[in-house]
Structure formats: C-alpha cells, structure tokens
Length: 405
Ligand SMILES: [Zn+2]
Image (cartoon, rainbow, N blue to C red):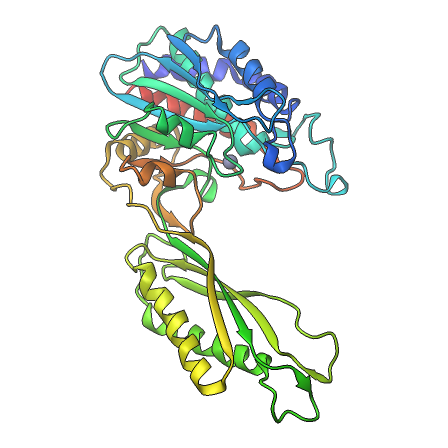
C-alpha cells in the first residue's frame, strides 16, 4: 500500500511544481505589512483542492476590517480516516513582503524554475509545505487509500504577524484538541534531519540609565551614564552566564544565551559626558529556568548600581515569551513522524530544540503535542527565496505515510 501512494506522489511532481508557481503569483500579505490579506489566494487554494478527494473543505474566517475583504480566511480541509483520531498539518497562506527588489535576481511574484528549484516570495515559507500537505491527500485519494487518521489540512492566515486571525482563531473555534497529532512544517533543522519539539523562553530587556550630562573636561557633578552602562553590562553578563549555566543537549547551543545587543546613540559630540544610555539584551533561556530568576538579576544589579552611582536605572521587558511545555519524545506525533521519515529517507532524524518563536507555541501552550518539521534550505524572508522540488515531493510522501499510521 505504501508503494502505491508513494508512486502517486511521484506522478504528481509536475503538478506540485505548477501549483506552487500558481500560488506564488498571488501575494498574500497581511495588513500589518501593508498588504490586502489572504482572501484571493485562499480562493485559489479552495479551487485547486476541490477535486483532491477531501471529505469536507471549510473556510473559518476571522473578521478584520483592515483588509478590503473584511476577513482573514483559514481553510480546514478534512479527509476522513479509519480511526477517530486526527492528524493535523498546519501551514500558512500569508507571506512576508518581498523586501528590497534590487536584491532579487528574479521577480518575486513571477516564479521561475531553475535547477530543480522554484524561485519566488513564499516559495519556501510556507508554500512548499502547503503544497506537500494538500498533495499528500490527493495521492491517498488517487491510490484509493482511506488513511488511518482523519487528516486535517489547515491553512491559516496571519502567521507572519502574530497569528491572532489565524492559528489563534482556529484554536478559539475548537477545531484542534489535545488528543490530536499536530505537525507544523514551517521550520527546518538541517534540511529535515532534525525535528523541533521544544523551544527556549525569551526576554528582550531594555536597560535605561539616567545620569547627569556635562562637559567632559569637568566630570565633577556629572553622572556618566556611559561608564555606568558599561559596568552594568559587564556585571549582568557575568552574573547571568555564571548563575544559569545548565545545559540541555536538545538545544544548540546547549546553554541559555544572554547577549547584549542594540545600544541607542547617546551624545553627538566627543566632549560631552552622556547623561542617558539605553542598552538592550536578547536572552534565550532554557525552559527549566524560571524567567523571574533571570529578571531578578537585571533588577538587583540595577538597584546596586543606583546605590553606588546615584543614577536612576529603569528596566523594561519589551518582549517576553515563556517556553511552552515540551512535546514529549514518545508522543504519538513524534513517533509517527520519525517512522515516516525513516521510510522515505535514508537518515534518522534527531529531536532538537530551538531558540524560540515558532507557531507551535500556540498549540503547546494548550497542551497539544506538536512537532515542527519539514525539509528546506532555511531561506524564509530572504531575497531569492526558493523551494527545492525534490523536498516538496519527499515531504509529501512523509505526510502521506504519517496519515496511514
Ligand atoms: Zn512560515
């Protein structure tokens, strides 16, 4: 049976290529990125999949009056299986804008096929996996196979700008629940050799030192914010890395990271002592470490430096995300995915963690075990983005075999 469905996938290779190229021609950019939304593209997708053998195809729209159509469409297409259990594959319809056109060798919205690759904005992120998922169902239907699981192919809007009108809307509507197997093919570790099951927590900390400006020749009476932020930065840097040095080999790097990053400009001239300094830190924290412990380090150090220097130090967390529960290594979705990858490829994928920020967080926060996996070159949001046709075919086979249980 496996052989039959794999053969059907291979036969559809040209069709998959053409389909992805059609999708690329319709930009679907959210209003936060000054786009008109996903409606037109969602209608094309509905048209494409109407004869793919789904038992039902529904649109679950979220209202959004910032786009001309007034809605952000989400498509839920289901092919029923033998068991009362759902395999959910979630991809997204929306794309990010093309960016600087000078950086592109081709027209981002007029796809080109060269050397086995399809070029265009959204080719990889997330058109490739969307195509693989719908063609997995087409192949099952053509092979006359009723899958083991109900396969629910969900294509959402608004992934690139927060997911409120996409994944969050779908979850609020109760379309996914805890017993489901959820696969998000929207991030690739080492071209498919890793399956992401856990992510780090993250905090972006903004530290603002308010000292007292003055002439560099007469520092008396001033409070040099530059000197204070430099010392503060060194102090918390050491403290954080020393205090939170535990390792988790699922992650690369295996430790938490605490990087001083952006620094705002202070004074324009060399002979002034800056009265104000602003420094940001990007912290990626292992899920085992409570965020409050990390915050305490920033805050205690601020108090200490205030006492020592007479400056005022304000701490603000401009972004914060608490790591969701890890998807268990032995969860059904992970086991079935590994088995399917083993059947289709010559390698055994590793389970990995990442620095943060996949849409899987929305599911894991609700206790839904979720695996993030696909095969790509990690070109999302870059100019000259492309998808590898062989990978589209390969992932399609993996999805079809997973559905067969
Ligand atoms: Zn994406």
